[in-house]
Amino acid sequence: MKISELFKQKKVVYSFEIFPPKVNDDISKIYKTLSELKDVSPDYISITYSAGGSKNSRTKEIAQIVKDEYGIEPLAHLTCINSTKQEVANALQGLVDIGVQNVLALRGDRIEGEVKSDFQYASQLTEFIKQNSDMDVAGACYPEGHPESANIVEDIRNLKIKVDKGVSHLNSQLFFDNDDYLKYLDMVRLAGIDVPIQAGIMPLVRASQFGGIVKTTAAKLPAKISRMYSKFADDPEALMEAGIAYATDQIVDLLSSGVDGIHLYIMNNAYVARRITENIKPIIDKLNGVK
Ligand code: FAD
Image (cartoon, rainbow, N blue to C red; front, side, top):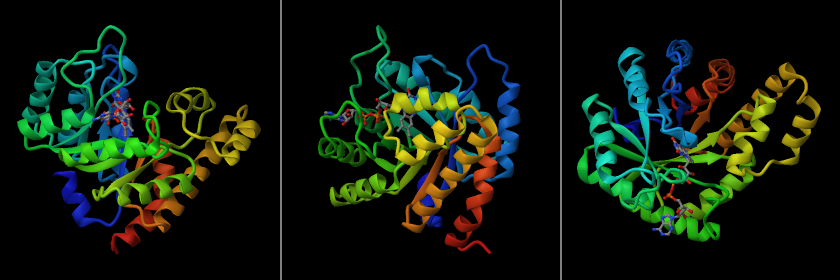
C-alpha cells in the first residue's frame, strides 16, 4: 500500500525506523526485532540506506522481509549524493522488482571520495523517482533547520522545491523540544507546504546516544533532558525508564497539538518500541476512531 493512502485513512500515522544489519552481520537479530515489532502493529516501517557512510546495501533485503514475511508496509530509504544516476536507477528498479511502493528520497551525507555529480539535492532524486516509477516518495525535513543551510527560511524554501517535485509526505529529523517543532510546522504551512508531516521522535534510553546520534544531528537538548542525563547516565535501568517517559510525554503533547503522525527512531530496540506504543496507542486509536 502507498503511504499516501494511509494518510487519507488515518488522522494519525504511526511508524518506526530501523537500520539493516551490516553486510557481514548475522541476520537473525533483525528477525527477532521484526517479530516483536509486528506485535505492536506500526502502520509502516522505514529502513535506512547506507546510513553513516557504511555503504550498507541491505535495505532492499530487509524491505522485502518486512513486506513479505511480516506483512508490514516498508518505506525504503534511498540516497543519491554518493551514487551515479545508473546506480540509483538500479537500486530503484531493485525495489520496484520486489513490490516496494514507498521510497524516502534523501540526498545523504557526503562520503569523502565517493561523491558523484549526477545528483546534488534530494529534490532531484525525487523528480528522478517520479519520472521512472510509480512509487510514493517521502522526504526528510528539519525542525531546527538542516545543519548546512544558512537559515531556516532558506531551508524551508528548498523544502518547498522538494515537495513540489513530488514528495507526498515528510518525516522530520529528531527533536526534543515540541515548541520548536510546532513553530516550524507553522512556518512550513505558511510557505505553502501542505503534505502530511510526521514528527520524528528518538527515545533517549542509553547513555551512548547522547554522545552519538544526538551529537551527529546537532539537535538542541532542553535542560530537562540534560538533567535526566546528568542524574541517570550511570544507571542504565533508570535512564531507560526516564527516556521512555520523556518520549511518551513528548508524543502525548504532539498528539494533543494535532500532528499528522509520529515516526519513532527506535534504533532496532523492539522493547523500547513496545513500551512506548503501549503508552500512546490507546490515544492514537481514539484519534483514529478505532473502537
Ligand atoms: P536535501 O533535501 O537535498 O537538503 C540538503 C541541504 O541542501 C539542505 O541544507 C537544503 O536546504 C539544501 N538544498 C536543498 N535543495 C537546494 C537547492 N535547490 N538549492 C540550494 N540548496 C538546496 N542519511 C543516510 O545516509 N541514510 C539514511 O537512510 C538516512 N535517513 C534519514 C531519514 C530522515 C527522516 C532524516 C531527517 C535524515 C536521514 N538521513 C539519512 C540523513 C540525510 O541524508 C542528511 O541529513 C543529509 O545531509 C540531507 O539529506 P536531505 O535528503 O534532507 O537533503
